[in-house]
Length: 268
Image 1 (cartoon, rainbow, N blue to C red):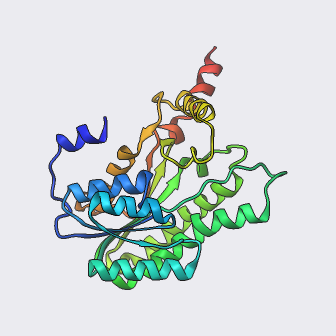
Image 2 (cartoon, helix red, strand yellow):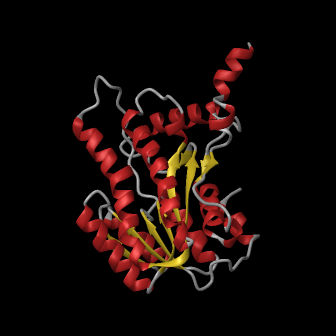
Image 3 (cartoon, helix red, strand yellow):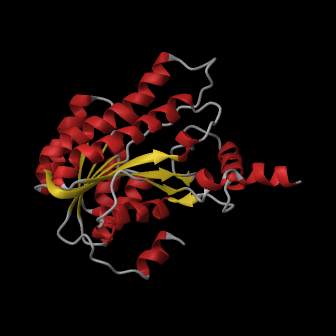
C-alpha cells in the first residue's frame, strides 16, 4: 500500500506531544518514519550527514534538522545535543543511519571495514549514548537492523557483522535501560526500496537488483520505506509497551522462511 493511501485512511494521534529524534532521517526509511511520526502528531527533529538532502527533508516536513556525520563522534554528539535542545527532550529515538558495503573477503579493505562499522555500529551506539541524558524515562529507542545479519550473503561481511553486533548491543541496552523503563528494540529490515543500493549505480543495474531481490523474497516483492516506518512507529508506541530487547522482523518472511528462489529451485 502506498504511503499516501495509508495516511489518507489512517488518522491517529499516538504521538501527540511526543518528541522524536531520528538519526539518519533525511531519506529512505528515516524520512518515511519522520513523515509518519509527524502525521501522528509528534514533534520531530532529524540529523543526517548529507546537508542538501537533510535540508530538503526539513523544508518538506517543517522540522528541525542538524547536520552531523554519525561516523564523526564529535559531530554525532553535537547534532544530537542540538536537536534535543530544539525539541526540549526526547521521548523516542530512532537510530537509522547506515551505509552499505559490498566486498568479498579477497577485496575487502580496512577502510571499507572501518567506514561501515563506524556508521552502522560505533556511530549508532554513541548516538544513543549522546541522546540518553535528554531522554525521558519510559521512552523508546529503535535501531535499524538487517535480515542480512542473519543470512550468509557473500560480499556482505562488513555490513552483516556490523548489524549483528548492533543486534547484540540492542539487547544489552534493553537490559541496562530497563530500570529507566526505556524500551530498546531493533527492526530486522528486509529488502526495501531506498537510495541505499541505488547510489552511483546505472538504471539497468538498479532494475536488475530490484528484480532479483523481489524474486528471492517469499512475498515476491521488496518493501516500501513506509512499510518499515509503520513498524518503527509500532515499537515506539504504547501499543508495544511490554516489548523490549527484540529483533522485530519486517522482511517479507525472508529470515524465517528463507529465500523463495532457492526454495523454488529445491522443489523442481
